[in-house]
Image 1 (cartoon, helix red, strand yellow):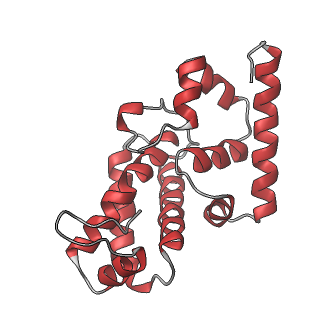
Image 2 (cartoon, rainbow, N blue to C red):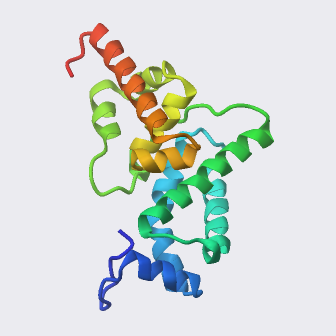
Length: 191
């Protein structure tokens, strides 16, 4: 993750990158941004925010101005960044006075190195069908699934981001997957 080194430099630990960023190192800030900006932008875009680039910039401005107060590991940093992103999305919708909508998934902007579950689903069902299936979920279930798939967060990290207990997040995920499975089975789609 953050610990990969640049050409000619040995790899560094994620905790070292955090320490260097807290000391004001531009290179460390760049490493954090390069690692997390793509997933944050994908998460913000998936929440239907009208200007995802602007909100992503707000997230990293908050990260870089608040990194001095951050205390934790590389894994905790990722959760902290997505907590900030989640709050910025909520703030954006509050300012606009309406709820979030779904936006299309844009695979060419997905910078993850391994194929995602979304890629497989979009290939098998088509983008419109995926959105129709997601629309059958509750807002909370859709939020959990988005953070798990797009942001690639653990159940514990999702719980921290959305301010719920781990058990509640697991229950939301389980109900969302069961609902999706029933809908697909009813259509005769093999799982």
